[in-house]
Amino acid sequence: MTTKLLTITGPTACGKTALAAELAFRLGGEIISADSRQVFRGMDIGTGKDLADYCVCGTRIPYHLIDIRNAGEEYSVYQFLNGFIEAFQSIVNRGRQPILCGGTGLYVEAVVKGYQLADAPIDPDFRRRMESFSDQQLTDRLASLIRLHNHTDTETRDRLLRALEIQEYRLAHPDDYPHLPSMSHLVVGVLYPRDQVVQRIGQRLRQRLDEGMTEEVQQLLDSGVPEERLLRYGLEYRHVTRYLRGQCTYDEMYRDLFTDIRRFAKRQMTWFRRMERQGIPIHWIDGTLPLAQKANIVQEAFLSDSCESS
RNA sequence: GGUCGUUUGGCCGAGAGGUUAGGCACAGGUCUGCAAAACCUGCUACUCCGGUUCAAAUCCGGAAGCGACCU
Image 1 (cartoon, rainbow, N blue to C red):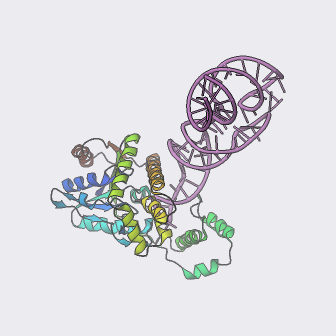
Image 2: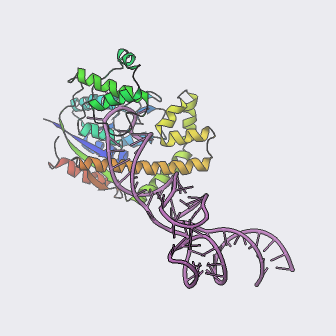
Image 3: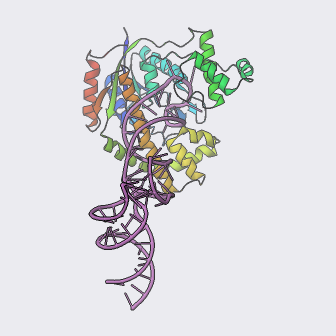
């Protein structure tokens, strides 16, 4: 019998965690996080880990793929997918209900569409052989293997090499990728009117700053996480780092960070619309409803047989 | 009340008779290995009224707003 995976997603600041935890409580479930930043230890306030939300009516809801890497370490969709498979299987083996929850569209899509990602290791021989080629030659070579989508892969030599390395590995080992267990899906998206999303983002940002956002970033810097890394993590980590380095005033930081979070929420929605266009139905629910009511709606949809299998 | 200056799209900001400055915001999008990243596209405005001119955001006159100074 295939398991039905319940996925709770949506743009930032829409209360995904609380809803997922409530549903986990009702369905006897465990949560697998689909958040590319909550994997890092010590990045708590800025990523909105809200660990208190995982306690519902005195019951601790188990969660997975949170706090599994040190800040600054590498993590990518490939590692996420592996982690997902492992967590999913252990949850199912325990007879519990897996619930995927998070706003990283790529990660959600990787699960729902069943991405096949090869375990391409770093190959020093390959890299040595590539040394003599120009960026353009490498780009041409990559273009002959895959359809180049945007600049992401060819932006820097590092990324270019990595992309090529992966494709070369794929060619040599066409069947070497972790297999997702078969499952069916219900994807639920939590949605607020846009002006309310903006309002919630602002509110939450002020709260994060009050709770010690800048101190958290300072600690990460003190503990040796490279500045470039924090800048790359984006949003809170990027803007607060700039502020701590004296590159902007507090007010400028607040303003620019607020803007970036709003834009992030917009891009998330762009991603979700794209998923829908590509045939992944998202069951949108009104975020403004009370939590219990939202949970009722999702529970009902989940327990009915109307959801598609993959 | 008088004198001088100023007025450009949601914001900042160049231009000085005849193409769209640009940036930011905003909106839409791309994206299967850093995705909270990176990248792409769209957005044609010159305070108002009259005049000069083939042609005015640009020149002239007036009005209004804003600013500075004077009595």
